[in-house]
Image 1 (cartoon, rainbow, N blue to C red):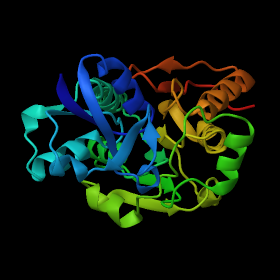
Image 2 (image 1 turned 180 degrees about the horizontal axis):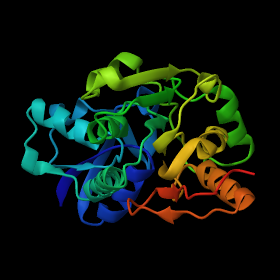
Image 3 (image 1 turned 180 degrees about the vertical axis):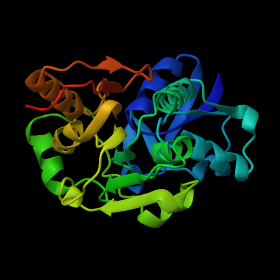
Length: 284
């Protein structure tokens, strides 16, 4: 059996492990989140990503949806052979999401749809970078604490048993890191802090919003805030509806849709759904 390492120690990495464990000898997981290092999955240790270079496996499987391209670049730039990095379990999902956004941009151009764009739950800026690239002439509002999950939100998830797997607090980010990844940083408006407090006083209409806040309270707050501020034919993507870890996202989406009698559809990246704003559809 070939020796393998899985890069990513959250739900996606676990899913990859289940798919390859009978074909490869998985030695350990690695992850870029310091909070996960030293723990284990399926009795396999989670190690620093630098461990890969000390005792090189035959192959590395990408097991993260957010930031897998950055992880791949890290491995290659440090000498790990590109042909031994396997991305097939995550690449399609990421490309589908980006291609959906690109098609939406074409619709906006054809129908002359105006409005700003935004993301709630930026983390390290992986999808924000895509939004900024696809909409180079629109203001991009980036809402995040840039310090990880808020304690009160995590407490709610734990008390209501909405975390299906152990997750990190996602603190390994910063405003500087995110802005340095943006192709058009001059169009980015940082809104650092707790949402929706950070939107107070904002007078803006939105054509596209991505909500990737993971947890019940911020996802619901995002939907309640942005929906009445969407232009006609505007889109909201919401991540983690089909998540193996964050049940709070699904709970928030379904409560919001039921309360306001609106539908949503999957966008094909295995996790996300989309709301489309039509004329006359206002939050009641």
